[in-house]
Image 1 (spheres, rainbow, N blue to C red):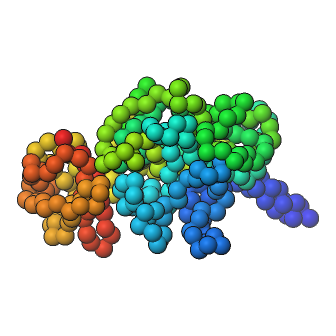
Image 2: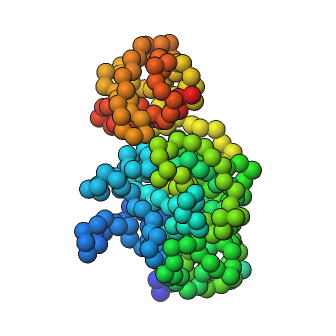
Image 3: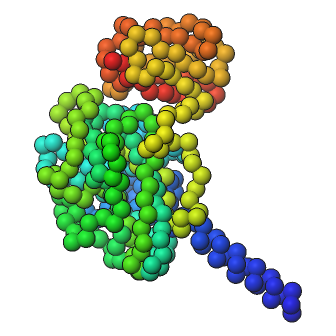
Length: 325
């Protein structure tokens, strides 16, 4: 009888620790997918609080190249881990107050006076010409928000978490980690992610990069969304934090970046027999490599200014982005 009680006690404590350490957000990496009635690939447990203006779901197996990972209509970006991420619009120069949001029903209701830590990774899409500061946020609600509205969410309570930083979120090459904390009122079961303030309150910065007026907007890729008790956040995925310097991407290091005349590529490969250089629009450019003491050296003087993706073939294809000044 004592052994049986001890066993039940261990199970109880195990369940408590598991519930305390798990991600409260369902399918936070967007990898759990299904097909809609029209055959479109979707990410389970995710939706949008607004009707008409919908976020984009990008996945490596989508039939349309527009929404594929890593190359899609907005630019080039690998998922942090896996095959998927979302894209949302936070600002449009010509369509005032237009926004996109992603929404999740949490695994469990938040407990009153408990503090939860939130984090996610964002990357500004290559083709977009504007970045924002201070205005990307997370709104927690007890009820399921569903508005027939193309505009920003007009809610009485502003988002409980806003990512206020001294600089604009301009990073296009790396994923940037954003994090914050929230003390629950109790009973919150849903969260929505996006830009909640009106255009007049947005702090925007022109960064260039778009090829036509359709890209005069702010559009962020989002991946690896996490919410849990603050003592159980996941380990760093290797993405770049707000105050961190870029690290090697997939065992590749390219510098200097931006590039002016020449750049060096450090890689574990002993020879570069199969590589391809394309720009953000998918156009291919010639490039010659020569062996150097610390890797391979490239002459980029002939390249027009803009964003480029250097793709390396092999058993595990890799890619790294750089900007030519």
